Length: 314
Image 1 (cartoon, rainbow, N blue to C red):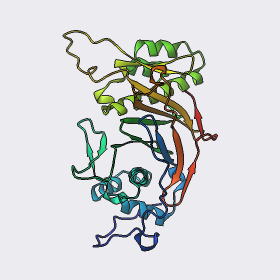
Image 2: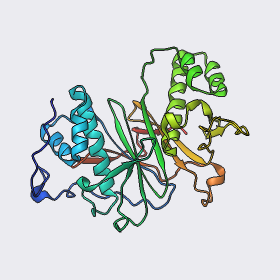
Image 3: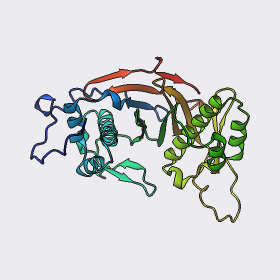
Image 4: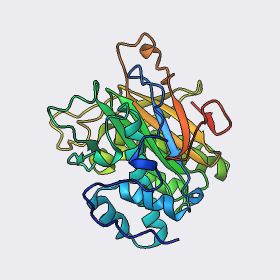
């Protein structure tokens, strides 16, 4: 189904399908994020969203540059995914401003590595604490993670994702020796691929939480350790004195992870900075405030935490 063209400019924009332009009528606020260790995740399934009027509504939430970028994508599926990704970010962020900010009003900036952040004006008092977000998407699932006062990285990968190369060949190219050894000891090819996807997803979430991305924090500069007690640890190699490689300068071990199976089809990793003021932080415990919703913005929200749709791995 082709996406609609960008809407014509109008002096008083409205969102079709919502009486009187009451944009927030069907965006109920979620429970508040009460601590830095709480993470909320909202995800949608693109294949479930095929209504033309709904897609038009989502398109109208985007900024002109976002619409231009989305509609320049090669193919209807990529266009639709780009629109849904940006619409999910905007509608999700709106929920956490007590309806003070219209989804269309958000402005964004990017750091030098390309990670998007909310652009708040210095005189803007609509948020008491900084709101952080991160987005991840595949062709079949898009997820947005939200935190307060702390950076977040989220990554989702299809559990059945096929690789063109042998798993160990890929690992030798991108992973550390300890991670390669961990994978090499798994005799079952399916099990090996499953663990590879876990490691990749965790590493991706980590570099996104750092605000660096793969180019700023190469995967082979740090190790993810999947401990036997289901704990996830990160190990950074000691810095070499007078070394010319500065790519490790940003790396640290002061981060917490959560790993889950999402919607029975995807591996989801979350990374947030460790809160050293928490009484549990020394135990490396996971964010206990993790909540997950499946959403069709303006239509339906379902809290799926504690159901078969979200299975915590560690």
